[in-house]
Image (cartoon, rainbow, N blue to C red; front, top):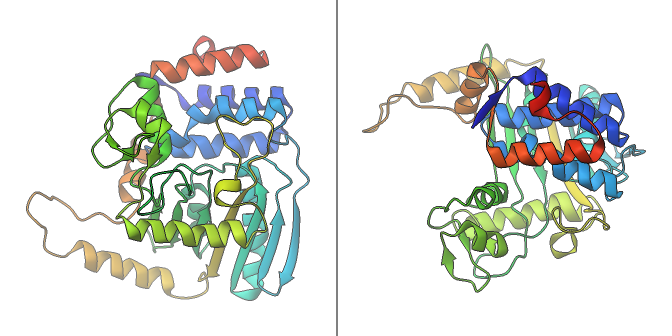
Length: 344
């Protein structure tokens, strides 16, 4: 691992996307979403994504400058057409509009269609929670996970993120895939040649495997069996079907298809609790839960998102493996900017 300073990483990422034709404002959103993921300890959604995002933009599979359209389809319901823009840009625009809406209505939903991979859900939900809202975010994804009882790719890992404000503290922030593990972690393990734990995946023949390369060619498994599979299906309903986009097997592949737009969908729901005593009551709930008796082997009871917040506060840079640095060197060469290692 090589630790690089945040300012150097931020500057490098911005230069890459500006070189491809993304606006400065939109570049900032994409970069900050990836850095947010790395700082929270989720490198699979961090700056390791720069090369694949950049390659898809260069190839025209993603629009560098989309015309995002937002329609108020009902008093508390927004339909958002992302015009095949970068996922973080599209989702952030939907969140902007939804935050404005819920100040009027108290509760609001946005169904976002014709988008792309939007990175960590916590990037959007944390912002909403800090602005006084309970927030739920979902996104579908290209098939990489089996339906419970199946052995072929049928659903994405379809993550769900939930956040709620807490008085004087960081928000409660649950961000999880409906699979045993985010597929990006298998991809990264495969790049490094590392094995994966039992129960993560099946190979292409439908057999359990610890070989990350075989797992990348096979399927990741739903968390908790039928429960995770059921949640992933409901995410597909809300993020895919409701948004008017494609879903399940119709979605474009992030890594191999550079001609067909992914057409990913997202779902956002906000409840404005900024004018209530909600955050204080949530703080009392947190205090009560953390004061309960500890089980053997535990020193502290942690709330959802608390471990990630501690990582963020302690971070003074981002540790990058050699394979990621090599990928970043290559994309720098392709778009004509100075390599990260040369300026860090």
